[in-house]
Structure formats: C-alpha cells, structure tokens
Length: 545
Image (cartoon, rainbow, N blue to C red; front, side, top):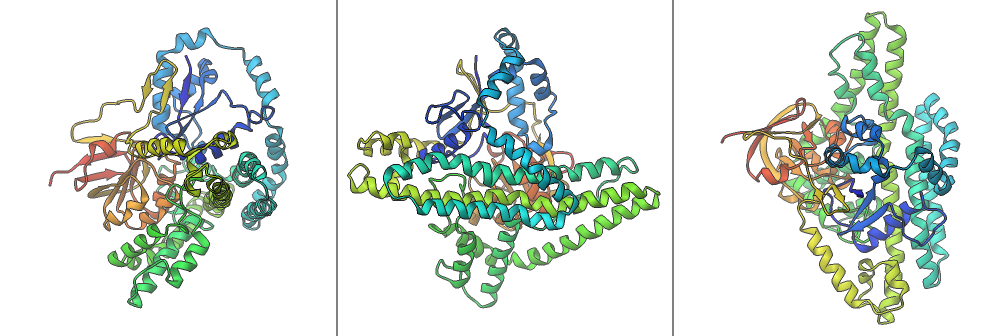
C-alpha cells in the first residue's frame, strides 16, 4: 500500500502550467539523473501535487514522531495533515512493516539520486550564517540582495531565448534553479534565527512563568515585504480619501503600487493565473473597502504603536532578567529577540522574489502560446496555461485538451475540501474527527486574545470586499495575498495551518486573536453567525444572538 500526502490540503488547484512548474522544479531535488522522466514520489491529481511518503512510514520511529506531533515548529507542520497521516499509518502499520527496506538501502538510494548542488549550497551557506549570527543588522539586507541578484540573472537568461525549443527547455529546467536560489538559499541563511523566539522563551521560563511580553515582540516586525505592502495600501486609501478620490487602475497611486507589487496575485504560486498587474480588481476593491471602512484611522497608528511596544517589550524582558541577576541570560535573550525581529520579516522575501520570476515565466509561456495560436494548435495564446509541456512537444492540435483541462480546473475550483492523504487502495482522509461539542469546536491556539464577532467565510482573498470591519475571517488557509485583509478583521479561524503557518504568523504580527487547524470550520460555521474565539486555548464558542 502506498500513501500519498498532500501538504496544503485546502488550497485552490493549480493550472496545468502551474503543476508543470512545481513538478519540474521539485523532481530535480532527488531525480538529477533522469531529466524528463517522471518521479515515483511525486504525483498530481486535480491540480494538486501529492508526495509519496510510504517508504518513510515503514519505519516505526517515523510513525511515532508523527503520532506524537514532534515535528519542529520551524518546519511549519500542518497539524491536521499529520493527524490524518498518523491515523491511516497506525491502521496499516502491519503491512507497512512487512515491506520495509533497510535503512542502509534507503540511504544509498538517496545518496545516488540526490542533487549535490543542494548539499554544496548548504555547506557554502555556513560562512554567511556565521556572519548573520555575528552581525544580524548588516547581514539581513544581504539575504534579500543575493536573491534579487539571482532574479536579475534569471531575467538576463530569459532575454536570450529565441526559438520555441529554447523556450520550452527554459520552462522545464529553470524551476529547479529558481526554487534553489530564490527560495532554498535565502531560507538556509535565515534558518539559524527562525527558532530564536522559542529559544528566548525557554530561557525566560527558567525564571518566570509569565512570558506574555513575548507576544508583543512578534508584532510589526521590520523587513517584511508583505506587511509593507499592506501598509502601502492603507496609506493610499488615506491619501485618496482625504482628496475625495476613488481608486482606479489608472490612478497614479495605484499604478505606482502595481509597479512594485503587481507581480503578485491571489493564487501567486501558480504560473498559470493572472497577476495583479494584469487584473488589478483585487487591489482596487481592497483599497476601496479601506476607504469605506476608514481602516487607515486605526491601522496606521496601531502599526507604529506596535513597533514601539515591541522594542519596549524587549527592554522590559531583559530588565526583568537583570533584576534576577541573570546577567548572561539577559544579554542572550536580548540578542535572540533582536535577531528574531531583524530576520523574521524576511521569511516573506523568498516567495516575493520567486513570484517575480513566475511572472517572467508566465511571459515566456504566453510567447509560446502566441506561437502555437499562430500555428493553429491553440485557439488563444492564454490557452497555453491549460496544457502541459508534454502536450506542447507532441506537435498535435491542443484545442480539445484545453477544453477538457479548463473544465476540470473549473470543477476543482468548486471543491470545498481536498484529501490530505490518499492510499493506493483508494482510501481518502480529509480530516480526523476528534469529537467537537455541539456548541463549540477546537483548534490550535495561534495568536493570543479573546474576541467575539460575526463570522464571514471567504474562499479566496479576492472576495475581500464582502468582509466588514471587525468581522471574524473564516477560511481554509491563507497566503501573502490575504495579508491586506488582516487590517480589517477582528479574529481569524482557519481549517488548516499550525502555529507557524502564514495566517497564524500574520495574526500575531497584527495582534489578531486566531485559532487554526480546526479542520471543518468553513463547513460548520455560517456567515453572520456570532462566535467567541480564544486564541490562548484554541476554543471557538458558538454564541446565541
């Protein structure tokens, strides 16, 4: 029996072009010798990519780690997925044990297939990590600077493309390089500080049980491109409102915003979906809602207030430790918290730069689409996003393939839930029922605070115009394109996620109470229903009107 794991079980499907990008990018990590051949551990279905974790589950200690939830928070474990995986693995433990390979055989398979560029990158990153640890303020700009240099080199390579075959090879081989140098390399250089806050908390707990001040340290962190994007939208709303103007795609302020952030989109990891530059409706509608709700009146002063309180919290914590004569620990905690604030915001930067590259890749695909449309193989150039590279290389007409893929994509966009685990026998696990009560449900406490408000269920961020100031946002999961909506909400509930998922992290930065990993909140809650969420216990109470 094989076990296919879908990590982000509740996201929208990818277009065929999006599936191609990720499949080609990921397969070279452990498939460097097989180039265009498919890999056994990656599968796609319904616009989602699944990973075969069967061989790992054959080891009892791996199953125990998953069952005991001992996955490091820095790896952003998706708790509901782990629950589902642990459930089905425990049930099939006997069969898993029967066909287990030796650990030596698995290690040899890994060694003979791993792309050693990754290993060399990890080793070469150690000097930068040491430099970052010694000089965090100087090293932080270098992390983003290196990524932008790689992006510039990528754009130069794109300029040299002439023939259709060159463009197809570029689309096939560049994803690995992009994931390596725009995503993995910056992450490796920041890895040593991603646990700084937890280390500081462990030290602090040796002297006191009260660690509530650490909550403030998370707020309004610098160097976060997504937070800066949200604040720029608020500033634009304030300026337009004061001038009595309405936002529109042609307004100079909107054009300036799109020049900087227009490569982003609501489904930005999919090379097949339009960017905000192509379709600015989300940006215009969000700014319009900020004007209508006067969001800027509270959001702008709160952001600067949170910055000040974060700095004050660091000083307060270290002062407490000094009073207890913990001089060395006070110094260490202060350094850890400074590192956390300096680097944690940079977590959004790799994806921001990667999405820049995806927009360029989308441009190359459109050029291919124009060629195919001119040859009569496609009805329109944009149809190229609904066929695969393999389809294009067949030299056949693709209109019928496009029609079928578009229909499947539309159908999958309406799917409300996706299996987290699929077995080779056909069993699917969406969520493990843990027995919530009739008047409440439970999730993972992700951002401290208690809030009572009205529910608004959204599937995608471009529905944000429906969201009113102070409502409780209930959704499946979030990514950076949701961030501007956090300035309007009073609380957050998510089906998926963990304490280190995007929604949880941003909720803490904005001081919004949040409960994540609920599993079925979008199906059991209704628009207009009043709930009370407790971001410290993980409880969601259904309130009577």
